[in-house]
Structures are given as structure tokens and as C-alpha cells.
Length: 584
Image (cartoon, rainbow, N blue to C red; front, side, top):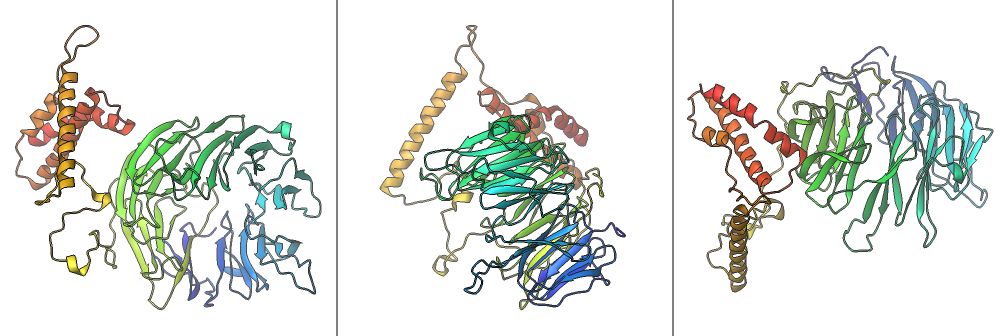
């Protein structure tokens, strides 16, 4: 490729255009812009050699090295398409139509050569779901789901079926993203009263007795498959549309692990509720899961399905690793207001930056691993369409708002071959950027006109402070009764706490009452220096030390702390020394 600055392809009601990414953001002059108002789809090939789009009349293929059109496929009914793993083939799908004159219908799935648009083979595939053929990373094998069987072709010879999986009815399958030996995961739904199975095979050994790993489960209306990049481990998330226990309105999800060495496990999650997102790290040895009722938990697991780090409980539902795997982005979009974005250093388990991207419907990392874009697109949202480009330190670098009469449908980064952009050292210092032109969403609760200008005593559930006292000056009888119960419960808890603090140890000694750290007590009495910068740092360190003191109190009372809380306590001596140096 001539350029190693990723470009951005944009599809909307004004057609398809291409612009350069950071730092110029200028339009690509060599790209033949398409002004059609009916561009249905666009896509870069996985290795970045080709770019294609269809506009309701013709599908065009461009060579990214020159941005010149190299092939045109005149099929106006193309609904969707995809490239093979190395980009050598392009597969298109059209809606299946049967007529009285042709009750069998015509082929609607076509395989073309990307380099010249030559037709290779045509098939009939009636369903729009899971229509895409599965390719191995080297394109040596290609698998297709036909009825309830999986058939395989080799070396792009689509005239001969080489192997077939027909040991049981297959509803979904996936080929591992690794070179030979290839592995195939199949989801086989169970009949009434019988379990469903996830079975892992090594190609081409497909007898039921030859499976490498098996996982059985009940209650699965749908499954999602997640491979790590090495193709040695796979996660199978099962979902039901309705939770028959009534515990969740959104159905029920479970997460299962299978390994090519025969390992199987169920990923145990520590909070009730749905699984919102699952993502493997590109470093391949860990995966992240967001789960539970809001505020949801985000947890990092190792290959043994053991939790190794907790990101805390917040309103989040999306996970995005950058291509190099050294930065993890956690956020909450969709039905979660605010669009809070957190960027984490995955190696040091430290947060890099926080920012907000409200009304985001699409987020994608740049191949360079340093930039990401967020977009507000139609038809999900028709107001405030546009996209933004950010630096991983949370700085907004570029903004492209759309006019009210226009709609933005999709934005994509240009793709590149693997290892084009090596992993770089992470900087915690924010780069220079711009301020957003659109006003930020209000964080205040909505008040009806009749209540505006008045003092409101209630709070939204998300903002409740359960330790605060009520400000109601005229409480009802029920409120008074509830208050008395709380006070009695609090008094009992305090008396029990005193008893437990002075109780005897197994050795017959009296355990002392936990006290605050002497270092923390000393630091709280230190005076400020008068230097605004130093005073700001002193206040920040004091706040951290106070948090550590509270954590130590909890620890001494017997409460089990999380990994990141224990890490905070370890930094007490370092913070105290830093504070003393600032005051001197």
C-alpha cells in the first residue's frame, strides 16, 4: 500500500466519499465519489487491498493502492456482500424470489473474483441470516451452511464438496481464525427435553466420537461465537428470548468456554442479570465481559475462566479493544444516557482517560491503535448526525457534523494487513485537540413545567445516596415508622460492631479497635503551600490517602477487598512520601 495513514469511508444520503484520517482529514482526490442516494452497503477487504460498495444499480470494486475502479458487477438487487479472508473473493447475497413461472427460484448467492469481477459460482440460499460462507484465514477451505448440514470446499473449487458435517442438525458453525490445523465449532440445537450442544472438531474429523470438546446446555434460542485470534480458545454465549424464571425482562444468557485441548468450562459471573458484551483481547490470553443489572460489572478473565481484574460497577454495555490489544475502551451506548467513555491501559491495569460521547451509535478503532471514531447515525438517530475522531488520551481531534437535511448511515476505517502498525508505548499526557461544537446533553433530571423553580427533594435511582438523611420536614406516618426501623437497625449494627471490635481472639487476647493509619492522620494536618499547582496536587494526594484509610478499615473489619482496591493500599507509602516532598 502506498499510504500508511488510514482513511475514513463515509456512507449516507449524499452518497459515498473518502477522506484522510489524522492529521489532515482532507478528501481523497483520487477516489471516484458516488453521489447516489441509495448506497446500501460498503466494505474494505480484511487485508485492505480492495474497497467495494453497491448503489442499487451496480457494485463497484476499487483497488486501494490507486483508488481506481477495477471491476463493476451489474446486479441491482444486491442486498449485502462480504470479502473472503484474504480478499481474493467477494460474495454477494440477493433476496430470494420464487414466482409461479419459476417456483424453484434462481440462485441468489454469488461468488466473484475481486480482481476482475468474474463470476466463480452461484448458489441458492434463502435465509438472510447466517448466509455468509466461512473461510479459513489462508482461504484453503470454505464452509457453507446448507439446510442443517455444513459442507466444505477446498482451494476455491466450488464444484466439489470435499467434506460434510451431518452427525446432527447444525444451526450455526464457525471456523477458527488460524492456519492449519483448522478447528470448527458447531452449535447443534437439542430437541424437546434434550440438551443442545456446542461441539469442537478438528478439520476434517467430524464424527461425533472425534470431537475435541463438547459443552451441553439447555435453554438456547440463539448463540454467539467468539474465537481468540490464535484459534485455540472459543467462547459460546447462549441466549434465550424470554427468561422463564421471570428474573429478567431481556431473557437469559450464559457463557461457556471450549479449548482445542479438550478443556470446557462455564464462565461464572458474580452478578445477576444479562451479559451485555464479550470480547477477546488481541493479546489472546484474556477476555473481558460486561454483565449484570445496571450498574453492570466489567471483569477480565484468564484462559482458566478465573477473574483477574475488576473494572468496577458502572453503566456500561460495550467493549472495544484497539487492534494491538494494549488499550481497552469501555462505554455505555444505546439505551444508556451520557455516553461515558473510559480508556484503560491493559498492561498496567490503569485508566488512561475518561471522556463523553453522547448519542453514539457506532464506535471503531483505527488500525493504528491510537485513534478511534464515534458516530451518530440514522436510522437509529436522525438528529445530530455526524462523526468525531478522538485520540486515546480522550482528546477530540476532529468533528464532522451533518446538515439537518442529510443523513449519515455508516463510517468505516480503512483496513490494513496484520502487523502494519506495531504497538506503541502509552502516554498518559493528553494531546492538543478541539472543543465539541454541539452542546453536551444535560445531566439534570427532567422536571415538568409545574415543578420548575421549586425545591425538589427526590432523586433519581441512579443518583440515590442511601446514606443521606431525608430533607422532608413533614414526613408521613409510614415515613416516620420506616425511619424508626432504620435507626433501630443502625443502633443494633453499631452495638454489634463495638462487641466484635473488643472480642477475644483465638489466643485469648482482646483485639484492638481498628484505627486509621498514622501516616494518613499526619497528612490530614499538613498545611497548604500557597502555590496553586502544589496545593492542587496535595489535595489530590490527601483524597487518595483518605480513601486508602477507609479501605484499610474495611479490611481490618474482615471485608474481602477486590484486586484493584488492594493495589490502592499498596501505594500508601509512595503517596505519603510524595506528599511530604510537596510540603517541604
